[in-house]
Length: 56
Image (cartoon, rainbow, N blue to C red; front, top):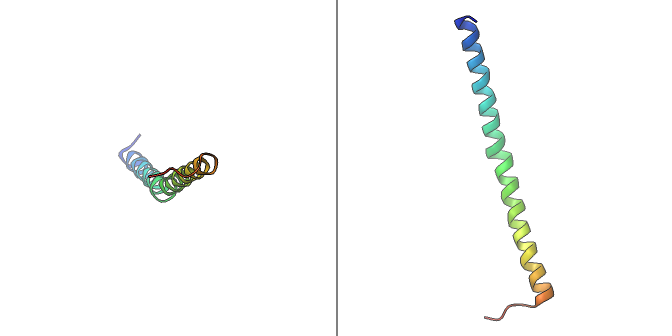
């Protein structure tokens, strides 16, 4: 491989890594966060539905 091929390969790798990072930051983390918060709320709701509201 020549230096030019290595340079183009490095650019492609960097671009793919940035795409993966963007996917993780802008899609995966928000989806995981919203899902986990919703699941936690659902669990609390089911506990209160079947066990009654916990007294203070």
